[in-house]
Image 1 (cartoon, rainbow, N blue to C red):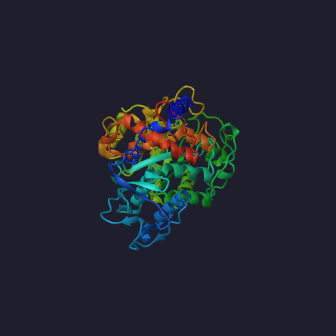
Image 2 (cartoon, rainbow, N blue to C red; image 1 turned 90 degrees about the horizontal axis):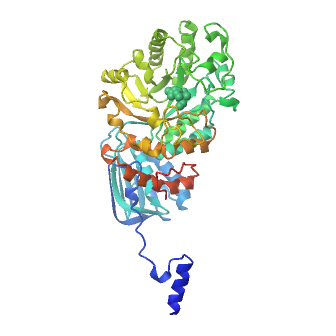
Image 3 (spheres, rainbow, N blue to C red; image 1 turned 135 degrees about the vertical axis):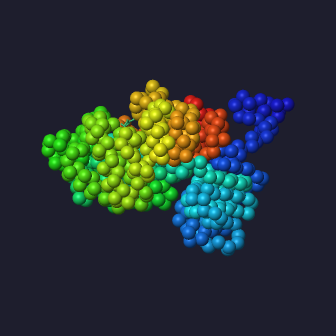
Amino acid sequence: MLLRLIVAGLVATGMSAVTAAEPARPAATAYADILPAPVSARAERGAFTIDRGTTITAAPAARGVAEYLAGVLRPATGKPLPITRPGRGGDAIALVIAGRDTGDESYRLRVSGRGVTITAGRAAGLFAGVQTLRQLRSGRTIAAGQVSDAPRFAYRGAMLDVARHFFTVGQVERYIDQLSQYKINTLHLHLADDQGWRIAINSWPRLATYGGSTAVDGDPGGYYTQAQYRAIVAYAASRYITVIPEIDMPGHTNAALASYAELNCDGVAPPLYTGTEVGFSSLCVHKELTYKFLDDVIGELAALTPGPYLHIGGDEAHSTSPADYVTFMNRVQGIVAAHGKKVQAWHNVVAATPLPTTVAQYWDTTPDNPQVAAAAANGTGVVLSPANLAYLDMKYNPSTPLGQDWAALIEVSDAYGWDPGNYLVGAPPSAIRGVEAPLWTETLRTSADIEYMAFPRLPAIAELGWSPAATHDWSKFRLRLAAQAPSWRAQGINFYPSPQIPWR
Ligand code: IFG
């Protein structure tokens, strides 16, 4: 009788009755939650627990990844996790470079009661495996199992527009850390536009000091010294992310034209611009100084870019005649090549003659663009950023406080609901290099703003770039996304709690 009263009391207070506790709900196997979805993953019985004696073992070539992993796990577990050479026995998280180098971020991961082993043909694969390991960890415990994984597309990018609003080195590095968790491997930095020039060019100092002095709405400007820019590039490289710098041209150039009167066809510098219109500016196509200017700028940028690509923009050149646009883009591609780099440009470049190595970044809102399809069929590589599916500055819905809606309203299911492998009508699959999620910042000012627009849609685009087409399944993806929320909260990521997702 007394027990019955107690149970009744507990139930009345909403507590589960102690004696009637239902069997503990088995924790969702973390292996089913890995995002992006891996090629294959299997949970097994048991788990590995990180302890005082646990070491991280790595040969010299894997040392950088080992340091990164230690930097993540030591604070998270409170354990020393020394880094030692392989073969010291005992519990270990082993990072092993072995087997065929597939030239990409392929890896294998094994977790058993005795330890963890990540094997890859190159360090970038170990780094990808470490991101998966991070998602499998709960406290000091990592559930046993196996993962075999490889990326579908080589190019998995995110773009940050630091021209409309300036973001500090720290803010960019924060975003880099977030991108790396979803196996993004390319950061495209939109460094110059009508409203701001954000990278110091020693041969043309006023570009940054004057052209970088303001921003949209007259908000504070700013720019990266070359030392600061090198720090961003190095930080990205330590996360196996390659930076592609963009100087947009011939349009989107008011900041440069305002900085040097001599760059203007009429010799008159326009005022600095803090609005959000596009298409009103153009470099002077028939002035030799323009190409001296670009040779200097591209030369300094190439020296700051370990990666193979420089982005020359080419979008919305509404104040450049079509004939002049062709002349200009053909000549500038040659300047980039002369500095040992390959060209990436918005897909408008196909109106000119793309060099064989030029990559066109597709930002149209229709899958049917015959000009781009023809260029792709003719060998031009394509990176897909359809503005109505991948533009992270698009509002989620009409009441989203930030962002724009000219291309579309993009909820998470829209960002996820397409297949890059057969999106572009008439383009051979071999032309598709991958995907990129641009984030334009006319309406964004803080890291919280970036995160509200990027999460949860950036992980959706990241999965489209990484995971096999066969894993594409909205009903499963939304559960994988839900499982990420505890980690985002722990990191202070200001994500949009989309009503489409059963957040944990
Ligand atoms: N289009 C412009 C961007 C930016 C964007 C905002 C491209 C390639 C609209 N060009 O997208 O500068 O203003 O959504």
